[in-house]
Amino acid sequence: MHNTGMGEYDVVIVGAGAAGLMCAGTAAMMGQSVLVIDHAEKAGKKILISGGGRCNFTNRFAGPGNFLSANPHFCKSALARFSAADFIDMVERAGIAWHERKHGQLFCDESARDILNMLLAPCRDAGVTFSLQTEVLAVKKEDHQFLIHANKGDFHAKALVIATGGLSIPKMGASAFGLKIAESFGLKVIAPVAALVPFTFTGKEKERLETLAGISLDVNVSCNGRSFSEAMLFTHRGLSGPAILQISSFWRPGDTLLVDLLPGTDSAAFLEQKCRERPQAQLTTVLCELLPRRLVPLLIEHDLGETRLCQLSQQQRRDLAVLLHGWQLKPNGTEGYRTSEVTLGGVDTDELSSKTMQSKRVPGLYFIGEVVDVTGHLGGFNFQWAWSSGYAAGMAIAEVQ
Ligand SMILES: Cc1cc2nc3c(=O)[nH]c(=O)nc-3n(C[C@H](O)[C@H](O)[C@H](O)COP(=O)(O)OP(=O)(O)OC[C@H]3O[C@@H](n4cnc5c(N)ncnc54)[C@H](O)[C@@H]3O)c2cc1C
Image (cartoon, rainbow, N blue to C red; front, side, top):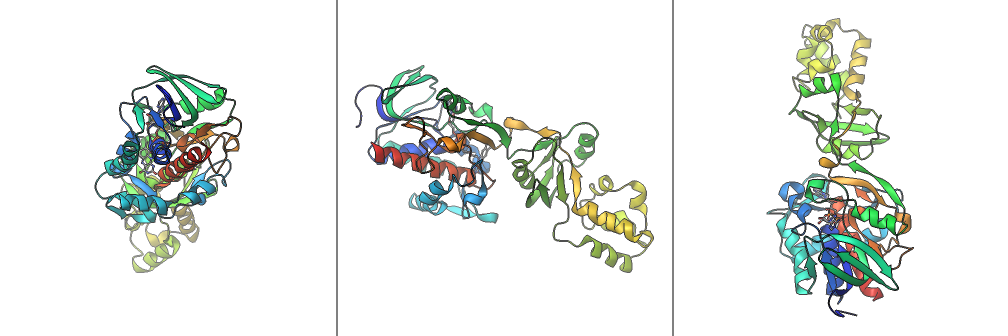
């Protein structure tokens, strides 16, 4: 079936973001008539700001282990059907220059706009219709059709794809629309939580940490059995940087972070060696060789800092090593959706087919991208999920109809 008249499409996709555009291009190239609705004034806004404007569009090592979900197996099928290698292939065929940074993260050489243009090209070539600045007011399923009632008119479709993303950055148009639609059709939703997000502190701890704002150092940070070795940044509000954003996905209110300030350094051996070489040196002076100068007085009491190395007892040296490799910090919260990069939780994967992203209860209804309870680590994984799930749904819709 194709254009059957005004407002009738094979598929309506709500959300012109990463997943929605991937799905639209895929289904349209397979001969489907596609309408993409978005309440924003332009498509792909998050793509444009991603990766500091260069879009970390995938990760060479993307695999199921890089995703959080109540069902960690759910993402496997879609990731296998459309992998990081498949997306790299698309990028290369589009002639987009890219480069690899650490941990397999791939970025555009020029601009994130290249990725958006690449996604829009098949939509344009295959005649996808866009209705931007459009609010969906109600959605109903009648017989085998969906009726999408919007402020710009009513649309009918055999398939409805919800690709409205997570709740992060409401200023950019993020909304709970997808979760509400899921619930209105009786689908279970896992409560959303801001993730890949900086931590905040209050009171005395905030005042202490504030004095370090601007300092960045490589650490290993652990919480709830997970740990990440990356940079940590002190901010005026608390802590940020890649190590912190990564661990935020595993942190729950009340949890304490364990920060190894000197990963890979045997600080006990270092202190022993310094004690032999410069027994009269003050502890602070020696620690400043390993750590940012402003951080040291925050870690150790003034008196201890002034102690000469030769006066330190073995127990004090041991205690120091424990502190340096396991500094405990208890955030009071996170900066929330205002700055979080993604949202944990979403439509319960139990409700969806892992091969097609179609609702098991409501045939023809699909959920893709961040609205689904699949959340990637930092490093290009969230876009890869958008591409893989968008492709899975786009192909499935074309195959069914
Ligand atoms: C600052 C920032 C940087 C990021 N950088 C990276 C990166 O480099 N690499 C990476 O992998 N991930 C990155 N991410 C995460 C990534 O952007 C998202 O995971 C990804 O965009 C999710 O794709 P999506 O299509 O599901 O949702 P989105 O891309 O968010 O698209 C959702 C679309 O739905 C529309 N919408 C929402 N509500 C409604 C509604 N009620 N009616 C109509 N339309 C609606 C929105 O306007 C939007 O166009 C970043 C996120 C942020 C916030």
